[in-house]
Amino acid sequence: MPKIASILTQFLLPTILLGSALNTAYAETQYVTENLNTYLRRGAGDQFKIAGAIQSGEQVNVLDRQGKYSLIRDSKNREAWILTSELSNTPSSKLENPKLKAQIQELTLKLNHLDSDWQQRTVEMQRRTKQSEQQSSELLEQNSQLKRELEIVKNKNRDLEAMLDVGKREIAIQWFIYGGSVLGVGLLLGLIIPHILPRRKRRDGWA
Image 1 (cartoon, rainbow, N blue to C red):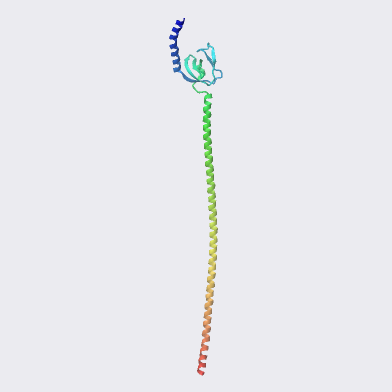
Image 2 (image 1 turned 120 degrees about the vertical axis):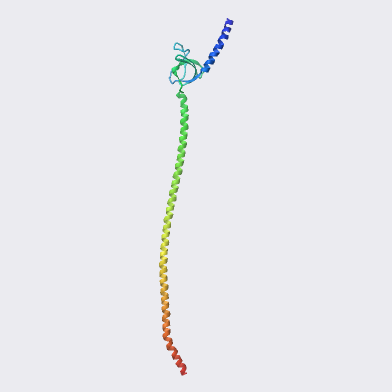
């Protein structure tokens, strides 16, 4: 009996190893569907006993296919048969949800960054607009002030011109009075001197 067991081992061991190698080479990644009850069987048929259950959405490696069943290896390194209809090439929501959450978080961060950047730009634009309005108001005030000062200068010039005209008239009148006075004095002297000089000569002759 030991010799028979040894011979069987020598012949069967290579076959078992070859079958394992073929199964490993055939391995295909698939995912268990979202059905709540997914059972594993010991063989490729409904007549085989249930070997256990597998969690929906779990990633498995397909080692072989027979009929409507597929031989799989799960994350616990269990090998069993499952209905091929219970497998899918699409990752389950359990695997996709974390990726979607990560993408949503990344997009949220980008949106927050864009929103923050836009708010900063809006604040800067408002600041510049307010500054421009303030500068414009200051320029308008300066313009009004210059107009008022110009009007004041014009009024002063008119007053000075009026005073100058009055001064010119006063000077002219003074000169006229002075000239008239000189002329009057000259006339008086012209009338008085002829009467004075002959009398002096007569008196000198009598003497």
